[in-house]
Length: 166
Image (cartoon, rainbow, N blue to C red; front, top):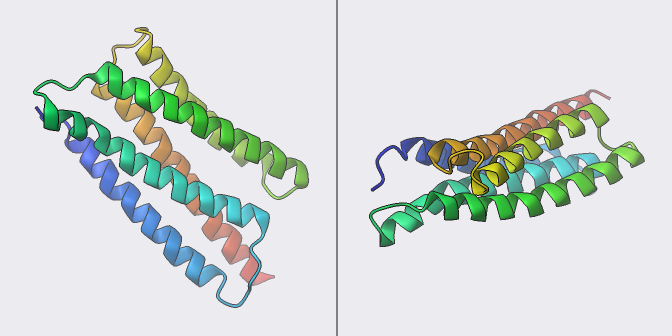
């Protein structure tokens, strides 16, 4: 019963491509230096973790579809909500520390964390029945991870370009 799950496959492919870009950017950006700046290292980690998480979580409903004809969306959304609670907690703690140190822009970090919290809140509300746990709610969380990955990618590339101009 995988009808209507094509958007999840598309997001999984896009997220996997972002993970590949992270490797390319890291190889090109620091080919002459041995030391990563803490902000750029955090952006790279965020890009890799969010892209791989989006890829993995986009494929979870297909795992449920292997064993049954009906996907238990409440279980999928619950697993995703639990993951996002841990992911957002780690992300926010890292952002707070690096913003205090001056390694990250506070506005971008707040916006990125806000997107992650929006995805987390949507999943939690889906688990508790405020929203109907289904593909729509699940896709919102996946899309939030993809947006966070995109922000980290853009910031990493622009920081690398700006560092090269100095």
